[in-house]
Length: 387
Picture 1: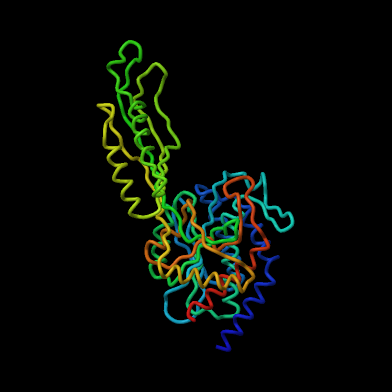
Picture 2: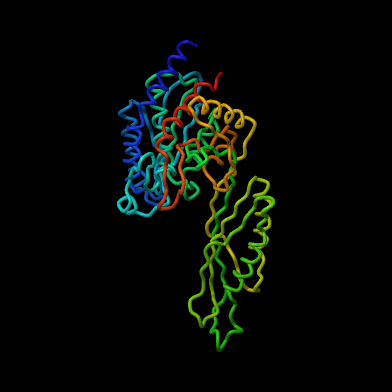
């Protein structure tokens, strides 16, 4: 126990001195464009992280992908067994190429600005320094795995299998999405389904032979009306058709139409229930002769707090108090990779990263004064998991 207390003291003391170094690494990451579809940029952020870990003597490896950025894993030994504590975060952002040059990282007092500064490059930095602290001083009761994924902003089409594989053997997952503006973490999130449908009809001249046409737009309009009726605020399910397109000319009965749909739900049961209804709507031809198909589908699973997750959350809150923070749990309508880890059974706490706000906007900001306390909170929670 004496050795553990000494390691704890050294870790906390070292982290207390790291705000300037954390800020330097954060600036480097923020000033690299890394939109989800920019594999080169996402991988460039990965190289910066790998280089930093190499300087700390922390080994890394990659899970390569040909279209999206590679997943990166950092490994720190500790304790007994091979079931690690996972510190997770994504390297991609929602911003187009050129954004980092247009409005690069800047600091005003205790506030940092820049594309992805909160969501979630600050969390990547925090996790890296927590891993480095344990590499330097020991004290981890179990092995530690830093998981740096590549495409969360588009529902992790390439990263999800890696995330779920690592989570199945994880003791605990801390997902470093930004802490809420309140300073809280997230204990529950909605799941989401995103899908694109294509409706096919039959063209005809809209003046001379209107009766020969079959309107794909008319069919899509009927489907939109029915899909929107599925929203049920009481159970927390929403259905939103956010993008529509169709037709070729104003004087032609539309032979094709497309729509992109966003569905949110609180539980897996709610997901199954709404999808049964969605399927019925998509299979119904409101305009006879039309055909509808789903041409793209992806999504997130809901984060639901298990009994084990609640225990870890309560430990995290106590450790936060020791680090000078007042932390509670919040529910979020937004989705994240933490839903994947929770649904495969890993005790999960989300939004453990530094506190931020205005994600996905030009006003995105992060509180630099929360980087060290939030890092210390995660470190303390790790050290005390086996107590």
